[in-house]
Length: 487
Ligand SMILES: [Zn+2]
Ligand SMILES: [Zn+2]
Image (cartoon, rainbow, N blue to C red; front, top):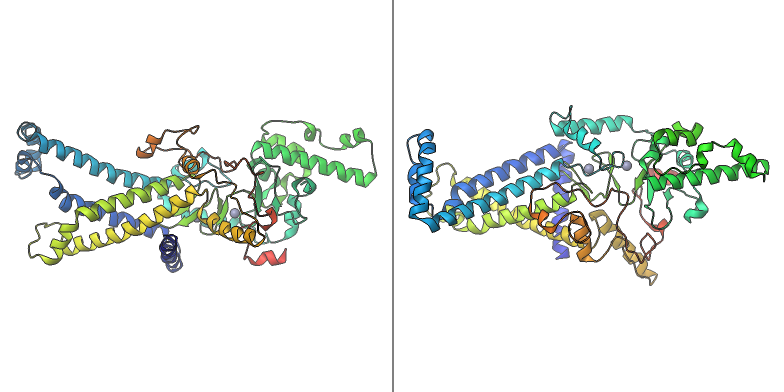
């Protein structure tokens, strides 16, 4: 199963990547192909397969063949009344099957729409309304065009000499390395157990120190502030061999010594002092990764998917999986109920559907069956990953960590793995102690993810990070990049 899933997965990636290479921004094309094919498939189902599923009451058939649409509309109430009176069971069956089919078709459309339009969540803008505003608000005329503009904008802005490691050092002078338990490298900033962890992204546009601090959640801002204070105090002590702490305090910004729960920009600027406008690498929370296509760090990054023209990340991952499941269900029903028509189209002389040529039907039927099976395998694979508390990226990383730990005769434990049932509940944000009920999975409802992108549920037995692997050994996004050799 695992092998089949990885083959299908790699197949999809290869098609997507080569399409991207050929036409640059492949997302819109993929969406157009998808909408066209599914639209045609739904048409073929309702026009050809559907009438064979139910016995349509005779009165309804009669009214359908009246002279004009006006006659049909006027005659419909009477025809419905007649149908209920004359063939009640056929009528009930007809209504139920129709509703069922429309429900599945609309859930397919809705979950796809949400996977495309719900922002995966970026580090700079988080899961906030601001991002939605930018996505749907003024200026987002045709949303994929807007998206392409955004990409080129980010490219213009990115600091090309970001490789200069002194900038990394500039970002961390006030990190208390002894507290974080890290080596001198300092790219990887780890905070005490229980606190969210983060690193820096060298690929995102650099930001001012003020903005970097403001992107952190409040408790990390406090830690940054404490670290800076301790660092400055130590520097001064070393400089002047001063032991008079009161005198030292008088030389530092008084704001550094005030504890504020949630600091505003003015607060942060005050205690950063002259460093406030220094450019530093942008902070990147745990589980976020940099997407090459979107040119930004995406929260709980899974992968970039041209079929939805954006990344699969924290904000839209649940819709992505729901979409795959609904798609597999829809195509499955088409495959099973349309079998006899596909046979008829291939081998029999008569073909009663004027508006759906038999070639078109055979083509749509074949595509639906093939894509349905492929997407079902992908959906099951993703559900398996979700149940293991992993994203696609993490599943590759964790496999590597596992073998590393095994070589040392240790056991790797994924810190985000809370047990398969709980992992699934957390992912869909439904169930015990979470925000929504299970029934919401079946409704076209927008649901907030359980996390803000910084804080994740973690195995309480571990001290905030994976077991069996040290923090220095964990991958960063920078692996395989040239400039790592420079630093
Ligand atoms: Zn980035
Ligand atoms: Zn992306």
